[in-house]
Length: 274
Ligand SMILES: [Zn+2]
Image 1: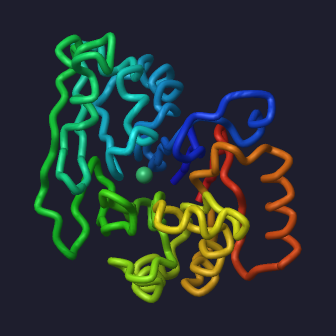
Image 2 (image 1 turned 30 degrees about the vertical axis):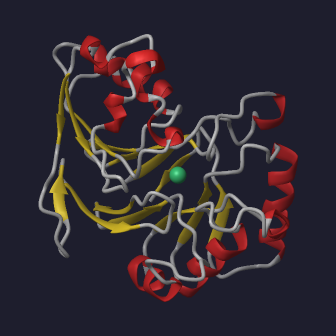
């Protein structure tokens, strides 16, 4: 299994000379099985570049959406396969409050977008499977989902294939006073996974201003990974104001603490083979 990051920034795209290393595009991750089957997680601005690659390939596209905040759907109107008439795109929306499962194309209307959703030529089908306790099969991947601690709700996904499991848990605030999912529950949910991709947008100095904004401290995501004994932790959803130099410094601090887990700050353009 291979995991590729096309966007690791949270909240707002952050292009510029200070973000060249970790990237400025917002959430988009591709999971690829050993036999080439693919699953896309989120459609932030990073999905535009992924679309440039996929447009040259054929085959159905499967997209899981964590929630409808713009940094997770904003790239979809610029996803070239959506304009290919022969293409099937299956979208699995999250449950949000309010529940707006088609927001990813409903953003393409009125004065919000020069391109109306009616101009999309692909066959776009929203999928509403019966999500149970047991994983469901999506394009050959075993997928389960969990609610996240985030304003307006949303979903985390656990994806298993090739005997490897990835947990994609972005925009999740671990240490809320009254979380819908406690840290103890998260430890059980992500225990022993091969790769945990977890939100780490903030550092201690960002608090208390950003308490309740729906993101975790880097240290909290590392603590979760250590307690859950995951094999690798990719810290995700970097603050748009965090520069490459600042993120390098934070990576050095993680390394100096010599954690039992391989913890790293995820980078746009990075591939991880499991
Ligand atoms: Zn969000």
